[in-house]
Length: 136
Image 1 (cartoon, one colour):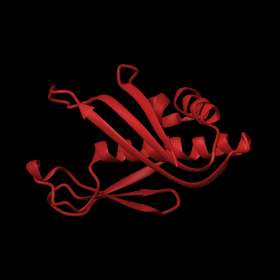
Image 2 (cartoon, rainbow, N blue to C red):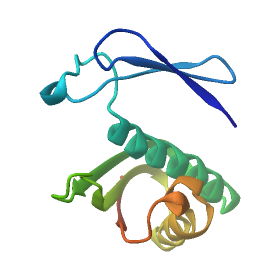
Image 3 (tube, rainbow, N blue to C red):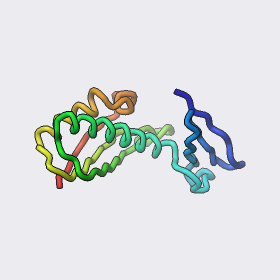
């Protein structure tokens, strides 16, 4: 796996490109000179966690023969006050629509975040990652 970043302007706007030539725009917080031309790096971490967890949860629910008609996930985080402003805690809230057994959903979410989601498993173990869900 490999990505390349290219500086787009004299501020903090970058284009990140993966091996399939898919481009993601990255920018800094306007407070330090960003121009709102892309996602901030810490937002990308949360997006990556949400995407990874979504894929794994969907696969697990499919194997459990659960019917998932619609799906949304909201990932929110708190950051510490140190200069690095690292994440202190992250909550992944799944909103699932379909014919779903709550016990199977809970087990699938647990497996997703503790065994299968490579992004969650790559984060610092000091970050408290919690999960909540709603079934519609």
